[in-house]
Amino acid sequence: MAYLELDRVAKQFGAQTVVDDFSLAVGKGEFISFLGPSGCGKTTTLQMIAGFVDPTRGAIRLEDKNLAAIHPAKRGLGIVFQSYALFPHMTAAENVAFGLEMRNVPRGERAERVRAALAMVGLAGYEDRHPRRMSGGQQQRVALARALVIKPSVLLLDEPLSNLDAKLREEMQIELRQIQRTIGTTTILVTHDQNEAMSLSDRIVVMSQGKIEQIGTPQETYERPASAFVSQFLGKTNDFAGTIDRTVVPTQLVAGSWRAPAPAGLSGPVTVSVRPERIGFGDAGLSAKIMTRIFQGNHWLFQCDSECGPAIVIRQNDGQAQPAEGDAVRLTWRPEDMSVRARAGA
Amino acid sequence: MSTAADERNARAPWALTAPALMLFVGVLLIPLAMTVMLSFHDWGQYKGIEPVFILKNWHEIATDPYYAEMFWRTFRIAILTTLLTALLGAPEAYILNRMSGRWKSIFLLVILGPLLISVVARTLGWALLFGGNNGLVNKLLMSAGVIRSPIPFMFTETGMVVALAHVMMPFMVLSVWAALQRLDPQIENAAMSLGAGPVTIIRRIIMPQIMPGVLSGAIIVFSLSASAFATPAIIGGRRLKVAATLAYDEFLNTLNWPLGAAVATLLLVALVLIVVGSNALIERRYAEVFR
Ligand SMILES: Nc1ncnc2c1ncn2[C@@H]1O[C@H](COP(=O)(O)OP(=O)(O)OP(=O)(O)O)[C@@H](O)[C@H]1O
Ligand SMILES: [Mg+2]
Image (cartoon, rainbow over the protein chains, first blue to last red):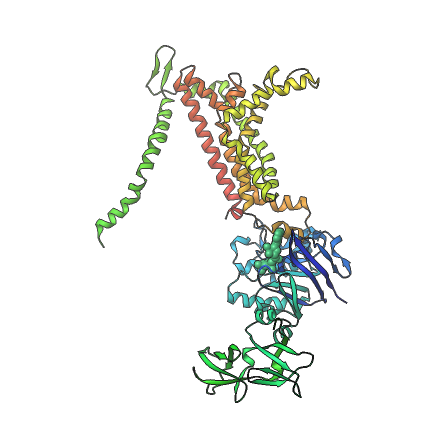
């Protein structure tokens, strides 16, 4: 049974539909990421769960209770805002204690829980600091502690790491995942950083223009993208135009001079997507010419001009000789490494 | 390593600020110093001003209860005006800030618009509405039988406070408005998500953060009210004098310039002390919010 459920939720601002037909079932303790480009409606969806924005259509249920009937102050969700929204006139401890105070937790227990929450995010000893005297990463931790100390049923994170520099962001990602694993809070993270979504979440919800493109585990969305948008958005990919030829037996998938047994259920023009690291150089396959060769330490990056358009190939730097710029090569890959979709308009 | 160039560089700031500096010294510092000196001069009905150094005027101000009462009234009116503007202006700014787009700009204009109209015109408006038997409101209420005699407004401290608060309101609203702009737009949502109700949010989250704005607005309103001339002159007239109108009368009616200068100097010194003192207090108290 789903713990948190969004049932065909939609939001319109005037004539503009910002979120449309959004259905998602989140299991208890799951870590979900909303991933999508800027303006695709991630924050709006999160704010509808939080109750700051009312859905135009659809229902949101938490443990089978309709959230629409519950005031945002009573939902008991923990929220970390992109700007942190810490209370600048309170110390770190007072910030964290605020939610407990609102719940009339007795003073002694409150102090103990605040101390424990700050210790958990690695801020023991910072109790009496004011937010403006803390670094971005420390403020972010206070915001996390403030959201977690109330033992929220769901933790909502709106791009909490986007204000941090790359190194700190990576550290915080690891820490966030560890904390979430330890206390097992159901978590929804909004991000437009695909690496962040991949490394943190159990499942990713890929969004584009207010609609869900795909829901799946990080591997699924990466290796079996449901749409061109998903494969483009999640890392680099090569899209080749191909056709499925059902006139021959057995039926064949043909892309340039590359051919393989056709997958079931498709016919006519298709798009073949292959990740650059899954393409190898062989004796048969797509003929191409290497335009540039870039050395990147642990791997080589080749930009090729193939008979089906430009292609990118990434090869591990395993010490073997690699083709040089200007060489004619054949590109090949295993059938299970590609995903094939019907090609519209051809 | 050329010392000539260094010297030229060192002199450049002085040279560049010289015109403004001269203006400042010429129209502010020199007249101010002369006013202070004037307050130590002697004056007589027939002999006029005598440039000697005596403490007569200061002694008179210090001993005659008339002056104590008048200064006390000046600051009482200024404090009440400040309280009234804070009580009305802070919620006004908060509500204004919560309005959406177009309404916000319309009402901001409504609030700031009066600044474009002369203080005299705005105060005279009150006189037209409440001035004795002929005031519009008084006439209306009396003919409707709501009141028997006109509401006392002219020549009262209440009238002065109300009119001053009206004149000073934009300064308070602007100052609180500026503080509200510094608030994180999600701060109320953050408090709400932690379980705070609307009253708690205003009392625990909004108020402490806009307090510096309210207080700096209060300093502006207080100092402008304590030294205000036009509004007290029109509402209070000759009967209810404050420091500014008294100094004016001494200068232009009694022609006792030295006494007027002493009153003006005392007002200035008291104001500077109050403003600088409270400013230092506020900055210390709200160091975290100001940073
Ligand atoms: N209050 C509002 N009124 C009108 N339009 C809005 C409002 N809030 C958001 N929008 C619009 O809804 C769309 C989605 O906004 P949203 O903030 O959900 O995007 P997002 O996915 O969070 O983007 P980002 O990654 O930039 O934060 C945007 O086009 C935005 O202009
Ligand atoms: Mg957003």
